[in-house]
Amino acid sequence: MSKKEKLDCKEYENCEGNFKYRDNPKKVHDRLKCGNKRFQADKLEHPNEGKKRRKDTAKNGQKPFAIVLSCADSRVVPELVFDTGLGDLFVIRVAGNIANVSSIASIEYAVAVLGCKYILVLGHEACGAVKEANDVVKTGKPAPSDNLNQLVGHIIPAINNCNCKSSTGKAPSTQDLINANAIHSAKELIRCSTIINEAVTNSGVKIHTGYYHLKSGEVEFDKKSKC
Ligand SMILES: [Zn+2]
Image 1 (cartoon, rainbow, N blue to C red):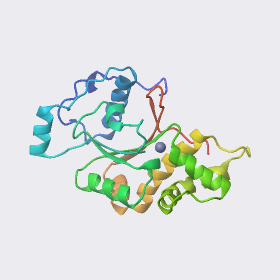
Image 2 (tube, protein in one colour):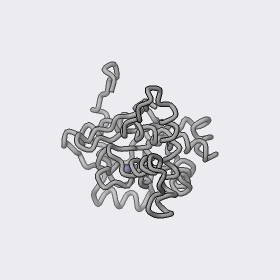
Image 3 (cartoon, helix red, strand yellow):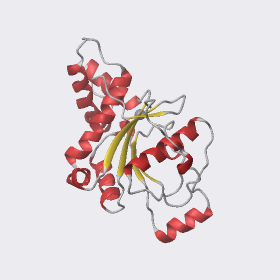
Image 4 (cartoon, rainbow, N blue to C red):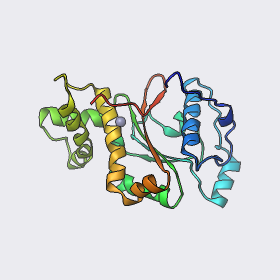
């Protein structure tokens, strides 16, 4: 986070019930940042996890305040990372946080039907899917199954783009590739979906990317890729 940026988390404490600013992507962004700060400090509030919330969401339906497209890695759990509970996040998890037909369709539902205004594509440190895709590119050998090849096929364009842009001639770092992959997925959501594209263009929906650090628990938002 830049030093100029002020983040007052008071407003985002005790977030029981539906997040009242779910139509305001800036406030959603700050809510996620504040939840992540609590997570890093081991000061989770565990909102919206109990009987009351189950009853409320069963009766009144879900009004998640953010969509998160995350990797399936067991160390990256969006609901915990942002200190959220039931009905708060609409999470799609797939190895490599790729934008494929299923993840895009799920996001379309959350945007068009549930009215979410905020999408986060969450990559993470040491992502096995990105490493696998990079191995396929480097060695020219396919991944061990057709299904895995389908999956890494969504990541490879980001890696190729990274390699092409590497001005130093040095291979990009894994972290750069992971960032590039999250940015690529975010762009694919817009390119491959009329619903998401129009929501971003006309309805104020915002798409952000994140990079999760396994040890500290920090999510860095909108990290630039060096490639
Ligand atoms: Zn991963």
